[in-house]
Image (cartoon, rainbow, N blue to C red; front, side):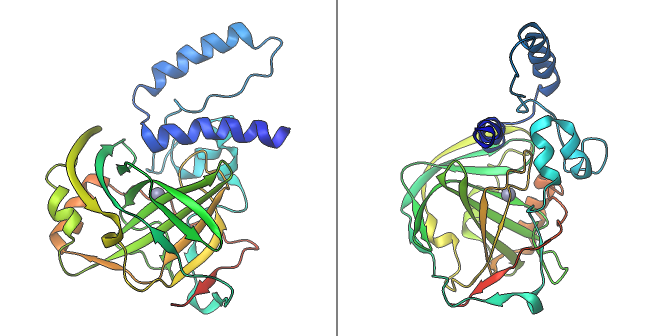
Length: 277
Ligand SMILES: [Zn+2]
């Protein structure tokens, strides 16, 4: 029962990150505090963390302090956190791992700058089969520089495709970017991406499969969301092969994203496994 309670509260915090922002957090926090004060005498109230303001910048609201900002952010201090540094010499090749089977189509997108990332919300049913389970694509979003590192090195950009199987089973596919040829998605949308909190709706369709490299090799480990409440419900699939974007595109996007990465977290007793295509 306790576990379920924790998860329900965590979900309530996950959704604003996926679909909203921390704007006006202080006002809402004050309001809910007043409301709680009236009703908590006999009820063990759930903590509503959705309005709590946090940042990627170091400081009182920064990554080192997320675990203290709200009761349900305590998991940010857990033992199975993301991102991590992938140490290639310690990765274990696993022959039981399967290649991802993408069942993606075309979709229009809503591009949302929620103050923490730039997120592309997709429409319709797009899913991926990963080692026997089907995960539905919810959205994809970006971090600059990358959140995962490989042998201690950041890439300039990382995209996260967030998929859900159930409330305690998410799969996030991460892809790194390197400098090279122009990225077609950015060529189409960089001019329209809101530089501040805001959104842009596009009626053009994009082909989701084109956003992935042809080599499906991946690093796999079990971890967490990389933003509060840092729920440890994510199976990570970080693709080994990066995709390309031009120097100008990477710079423009990085300026908008403004160092929105969480520093790497200890691996602890976890193992990173490799699927080789
Ligand atoms: Zn992310």
